[in-house]
Length: 145
Image (cartoon, rainbow, N blue to C red; front, top):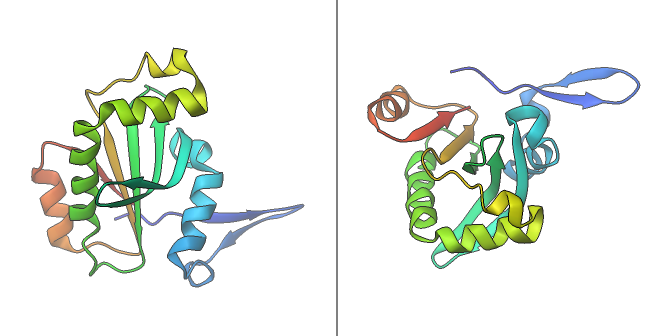
């Protein structure tokens, strides 16, 4: 699995090593601030509350499809299961997502939401071979980073 690379941008660009991105929240903040650059996704909301939990980050991609981000520090956590749970919730609550898009990006973008390929991007330090295999077997748009 390819590792995400983070950079510190100043007068000189320096790659940040994984040890400097120890906390899940630090990684989340960095990705949210640069989501469009890293993934081509317009950031909508952090800690998006739902009836039975919260999505770490949510956005909409260049094709106007919803994108859920889930971050974990270790491979032992159930990031894929959690992402699938949030994806199912989102598909059952399209109107809530549309209201968020209206609030952040306007009605024109909200009217163009494409629900055919919503995506879950799971970001973790590592994934097990079973995670990779499970994602490859699913008929869902799940990316492991």
